[in-house]
Length: 176
Image 1 (tube, rainbow, N blue to C red):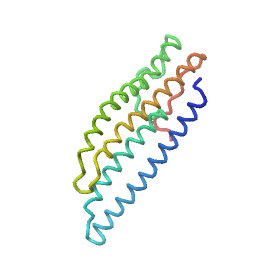
Image 2: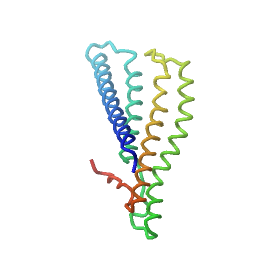
Image 3: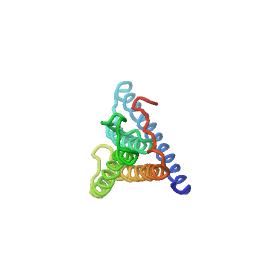
Image 4: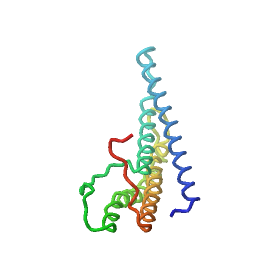
């Protein structure tokens, strides 16, 4: 099984991830409310608010997507319908395909996203004055979090398989 120290670290990372996403969502809501108020009530729109709202939305979406990877809530299409003969080894291999794909994509995105964030250092948003590296940093942040979460999910599935249990169950698509 995964060492307890690593499990605790990933759990703390997920708590921080959720907290930051929640704070950014609250800021997004406040900026949009301020934008609506300034535009429609006092008829003096803030030129920076739409741009900042877009940047906050980008961060919230990517942090939320990383949480979805941890909770195995990302999109998965089970083409077998759970009906597969061939033993537990085949079922295990089919169960880990989504996490392997997420891990591979996350590593690629981490490399490319880091380069993209470096380019952003030399760009500034026109209306808000925000350095674009802060915005583009959401990409490698998402990729790193997703890679960590997918690797832990794979390790948990591997340990369960080695103990004769199946992979961790995926939550149903419509479950809350």
